[in-house]
Image 1 (spheres, rainbow, N blue to C red):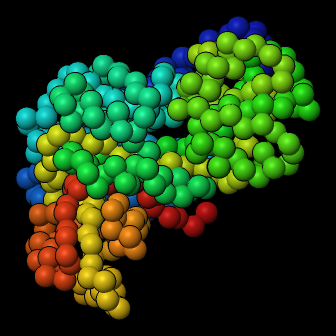
Image 2 (image 1 turned 180 degrees about the vertical axis):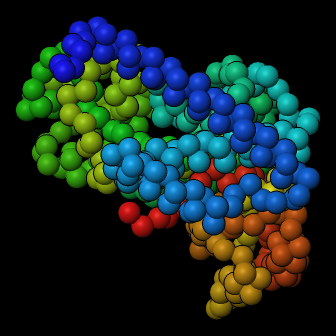
Length: 389
């Protein structure tokens, strides 16, 4: 018996039908995760149950084998689905905890024009909150904060650290002097490409436009090019605009390939960052702090100035250790106007309102010359549950 012959159009139609069914099932699954979140309010259970996630992934891997599906393929798909489920539940619970913040539309400030990395992070962050945006592009990090401080924007989105180039010092320095609170975070994958406006060859490029951070993050690639002229712009979006206007075979910009398409640019070469896995963590700031429900993982960020004597910082860090509070970031920055004095920025994985954190803050207040909480906010970094493949 011969197998029926299908035309390419028939096959594509079947694929489209299956894709539509997958989307419908994903939407149904997301709604069920919302029902799970509602039930957890009654039982006061945390959103994440990694033991159950582990058992779920193992079962799915075995079920996938029966369907001739590779274990890594199954795991990769369901890590993404689980992450979406966790963040969707977190967003729902946070809305219940902060009813005053319920807004169908939000005004958001960020560095650069449309297509900048800060712009992409803004859209990604608020899409998870199902919030429509009024987008306000700014020329400097200071302007991003200023428009929120004066009420022209509800939120500001700022890059704070990168896995390749490290901390973004200008942003840390500005946080010393703002009255705003950190209310959220998001980590974005940064995919740097060499973007051009006309067909050209890599050997012809002698001038490169971008923000200083991408220049730094792609320093090894730029060094290999040799003798390249680096032109600094206020954002990657401005760099792309500049190259689009010049339309010359010897100039290029560093930026995201998808963003480059907005300006008519194409990627001459991709993956040019020093590290293949290049991520930037962004923070979201607002005029009012948020309350974080104890059902979801939280971070607290604070700044402190210690006494100028041996062991002062160690004493402060021991307070966190003794309270079993995990520190995820420690950054020092000079205090402007006070030579050789440092201000320390600390990120910890703990809810500000927990007994542990309150007890630790009481002790830290006694040990420091100055201490201020910059914000407590939901942790958006959903670490995948490990399974042996």
